[in-house]
Image 1 (spheres, helix red, strand yellow):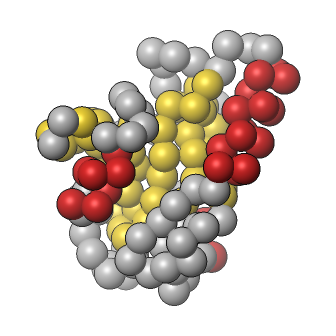
Image 2: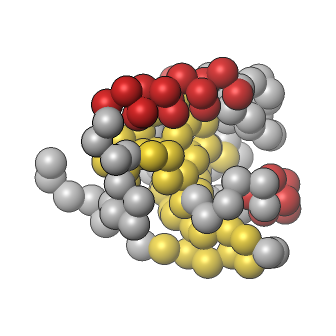
Length: 126
C-alpha cells in the first residue's frame, strides 16, 4: 500500500482490501485513481467488478472489506469528502496512507452516519 502510494505521486493512490467477512484483511488490490487527482480518489467500477469477479472465481468466501487511499499533503485522517463518499459503501474499512511527512503513516477507520471511528492496524506474518 505504501509503495503504491509513492508510485502514484503526485496523485492520490487507491485500492481495495479483501478477506473473509468478519476476519482480517488478507489482500491489497492496487487500482488506478479514476479521478487522476492529488486531492480526491475514485475507484472505477470496472476495477471494482474485476476484483469482485476474481474473488467469486476463487470460491473461498472472500469479499471486499475496504478501501485504501493516500493523502499526499495531509495527515491520515478522513476528509469531509472521504466521510461523505463512505456513506455509499457500507461497513468497509478505510485505510489512509499519509505521505505528508518523510516517514509514511497509515491509519484505519470505520466511517458511517457522519462518524469516524479509528481501528488499530495489526500486521501479521503470513
